[in-house]
Structure formats: C-alpha cells, structure tokens
Length: 115
Image 1: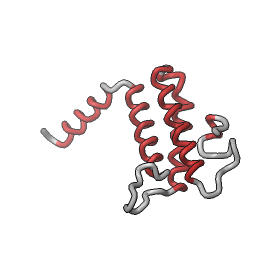
Image 2: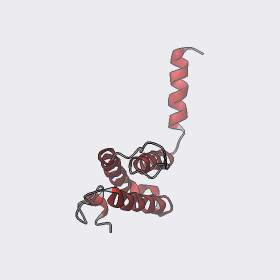
Image 3: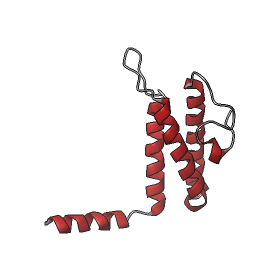
Image 4: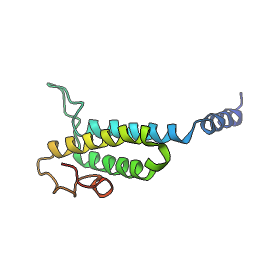
C-alpha cells in the first residue's frame, strides 16, 4: 500500500467513528492524565508524578469539553464523565497545599463550585 493510500485509509477509519465515541475517548484521556498529575497513580517508594500546574490545565480542558459536549453526547455518556471530573476536581483540591477558594478551582468556571 502506498503512503497516500495508507493516509486515505486512516481518514476513512476516523470518518467511521461516531463523534460521541471520539468525544468520550478524548475526555477519558484527559481525565486519566489529570488523575496522574494529581498524584492518584503515585506509589509508595516511587517518585511522585504529581504536577498540579499540569493537572489544572487538564482539568480545565476536561471541564470545558464535558460542558460543551454534554447536550450532544447524551446523559448516559455525560453523567459518568461529570462524576469522574468531580472526583478529579476533589482530588486536586485535596492534593493542593494551598487550596483554591470554592468556585475558583480548576474547571469550576464551567462546572460551578465543587466541595
């Protein structure tokens, strides 16, 4: 298969994936990365992977995506994503040495206060 045909096949493969699946997959990837950056994957005796500055960015992106896409992906997809987002927001607040004011934490611009 030539390089052009390979690219064309990749385009066709992507075109066949429903938008809901793409949105959910991106959201899950953002959520997983945010969880790691909040230190939720850290193991005792191993170096910490916590990076709250990076976590804040990921949580903001995740909250924006979920908020923007919620009406298009149905409640059956949006509800677990919202629950996961809330858990990550709470983990961020717990991990932060100087917690943000309620309503000022990552993603709270889109989700409202999390406490």
